[in-house]
Image 1 (cartoon, rainbow, N blue to C red):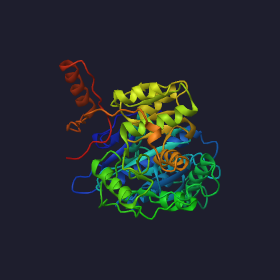
Image 2 (cartoon, helix red, strand yellow):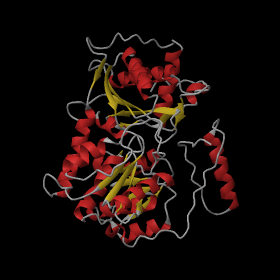
Image 3 (spheres, rainbow, N blue to C red):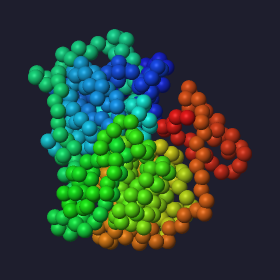
Image 4 (cartoon, rainbow, N blue to C red):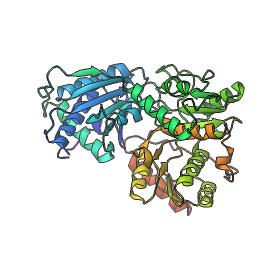
Amino acid sequence: MRFAVKMSSSYKGVQNGSDVRGVVLGEKPTLTPRMVRSIAAAFALSLEERAGGEAGPVAISVGKDSRVTGDDLSKEAMAGAVAAGADVYDLGLATTPACFMSTITPGFGYSGSIMLTASHLPYDRNGMKFFTPEGGLGKDDISAILALAEKVDKGEVPVDGAGASSGAGQSKVDFMATYAAQLRERIVAECNLGAAPLEGLKIVVDAGNGAGGFFARDVLAPLGADVSASQFLEPDGMFPNHVPNPEDKEAMASIQRAVVASKADLGVIFDTDVDRSAVVDASGTLFNKNRLIAAMAAIVLRDSPGATVVTDSVTSDGLARFIAARGGKHLRFKRGYKNVIEKGKEVDNCPLMIETSGHGALSENHYLDDGAYMAVKMIVEAARQKGDLGALVRGFEEPLESAEFRVKYSEDAPADYGAGVVGGFEAFCSGGGAPKGGARRPD
């Protein structure tokens, strides 16, 4: 993009790799409503530049998760995009994968999409993710958009809405119903068990009070599943029950208890914006991190013998042996789900790119890290095997002991600090580290 200019620390500071994130509540917010408006305007301008002005105004969908600031900030984002000349379509409560799908689904096909979310971070945080029909924007794209947003904020790039189509502006669209139908159709097609393939299965869905409640109500129940034991389906941006995070021990223990207590066949848990997921089988065994990767690898290698599975760098040696035993190739790459996905796109015959965090993308699904789609793949297996997922991971060996250490550091220059930590670690021993320019957990 031609908009690459030097940014002030305020705009530069909200870049989190390929996302925008910041503190939005309290005395010292780092991401303000004005910034959200300017960033959305800059995204619209960047889409207009890509389009070359040939097809009229660009169309942008805007979704939000359940955060307490979602309503206000989504209004700011829509206002900014309209001011920049875009036609805007309000998806309301949505998921991050659904926002992307709104750019490629016939009948919608928006030029771009903005999702207001900060994943599993606390209620006082929020952020923005951006999509075009080619996929999620990368780090360089975000840097350029933030640079342009600063110029919009300062009035150096005027936005007046003159390019918006007559009578347009903002329109409400129920895309989530279409997205849920896409997931149902996938389950029916893959199960090949008739119109109610989940009849007889009891499935617990834990949405963590995020945006994932639709999965129980609009995807599983219509296909015959008993979802009566599901929990935390109602959106609540204070996240009162547990952190909506498939990596979190308390969150996983919560759904584990619910599955065992209700004698369910399966449990599915999502993060706030449903781009990550994990499952629990009828015995209470957790399928997250390495075990989830093993299960998904077994599924794709059954259909694509000899294929490569790309993961982040902190996977276990037992997982590598499991993939090799199933006839596949395991390629470890650096942390960060976007890094893993982009690497997978470069590799021949790579149907699965997945991080231990629960971000999993399949080539058959547009290389999209979609927690609901990954849950669909696991649910199809459960339907075929009457709830028994053990066969999928037979032979998989967990390490006797494992631990993850997250280093607290200054956010002024996290990449530089992380590089220093890794350099020191490499000097100390012959192993490697796994710096990730991703979400920093608050103290």
